[in-house]
Length: 127
Image (cartoon, rainbow, N blue to C red; front, side, top):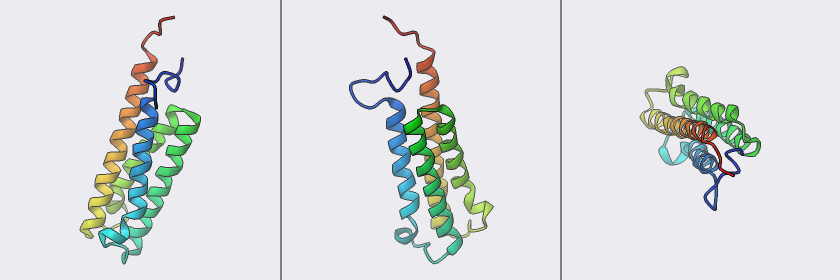
């Protein structure tokens, strides 16, 4: 029985994590204007691209129920968290904070989903 079949009357743990990741991806897409870094083309573009990449990988992970796609979500979170230093906008404090905090949160939630799906896969199911 796969982890998407084992649930507690609602969403399985992986899908709950995926919804959190989708919300965090939306936060990345929406952040430039309210956080005041939309004037920086590099920071705003990195935020938009990171958020869209997170959304695509999270939706694919939810639909296909594959651990490799959840690992891709974790990789997107890692890339988002280091984007300010990779693309040279670490001096824009709000952009660096948003990318670091949201990217790290995506990474942690995706890793938690991977750990939970691994632990659940090793538990024997009683008939």
